[in-house]
Image (cartoon, rainbow, N blue to C red; front, side, top):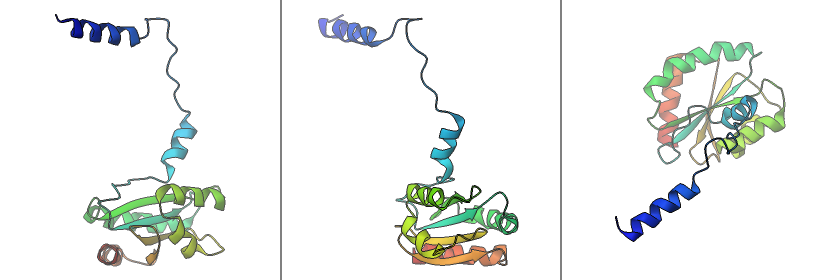
Length: 158
């Protein structure tokens, strides 16, 4: 073995902690992990997305319970094909938290514009890929076919 390989192996072993002497790695709490991932539901790489489909959701929202299955029915046709699906959770009724989620997902300007002063759950907001403008909105009265047509239009306008 050459001197260079010997030194490299020695450096690697010196960097390794001794068994029983190292601390266990810190694992983030379940809440911290959930908070970090909350706004990034199903996110595909931004370079592949031509538009964002942003669901304003709350556990207590009856409109959400009607809209979500319809979105899920249309989603497989577009998942990974130009749409970035994001869910913003408004269960806590905290607008600042909702906007922090929107910021993390890169859609805050359009979501702020779409919501105005009052947050309305149970809607899907189709947003440009850059997160700057609203393309259209989907509500609980839309059929899965209408939602799919809006998805296709959003990808085209993205």
